[in-house]
Amino acid sequence: MSDRLKVLLQYLLPKQGLTVFAGRVAGAERGRFTTRLIRWFVGKYGVAMEEAENPDVGSYKSFNDFFTRPLRAGVRPLAAADFVCPVDGAISQFGAIDDHHIVQAKGHRFTTTELIGGDTDLAAQFRHGGFANLYLSPKDYHRLHMPCDGRLTRMIYVPGALFSVNPVTARGVPNLFGRNERVVCVFESPEYGPFVMVLVGATIVGSMATVWHGVVNPKRTGKVSEWTYADQDIVLKKGEEMGRFLLGSTIVMLFRQDTIMFNEDWAPERSVRLGERMGDHRA
Image (tube, rainbow, N blue to C red; front, side):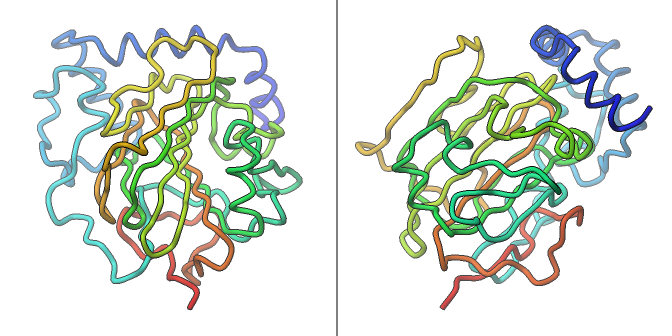
């Protein structure tokens, strides 16, 4: 099937219905059926179960339990760097924000304002800053961790479409990350100032969850929701878990101007692992 046809199907498929159905299947505890589904998935995608805290496929009660499985202690050591990679996945794009534009793929850009749901004041803080867009494939570990220390200040749920976020769709659907459902998490670093982590939903992503809130988008009401945490002291350390995807997707990070120098070995489509060096602070 050509890439053009794959993208066309994205517009035609009943994405909301597929996502609701997939969420129900993934959350169901169906005994042997669940185990067979997990075994099929592990074989098809080459999931590295030897890295899991619990490698026994037959012990998971639901597909979601398997999909959000924790890793064994010590398998993702943190690099000696100011910023570490927060996920296992692949680099979609990264680099400098051009005024307020972010590269999605060759020939496609979107704005920081679109990404974070229309808050121009928040977006202005990242003008000429840096960004990283990391894609989590089905085989990857799907918990999300902190790139540096940060204190949570806001969280915004932005309703939207549910296009796939795989590389083919990123090349073919304009403004993909500014139109898909997403959860915007705003942090303040004591050393590097504000930064944002955006969890982007996709087709069959049952839901997105954070460690401080739980599942953020259980009902999909179609309305923007916002939470503020100025009166709470929610502080997460570098490498600490901050959330998870219930089925795969993408995370986009925004940093202020002159905050991060990215790892010189990074390049689009390169595989990355949780804890590896993402970059260092610009002195």
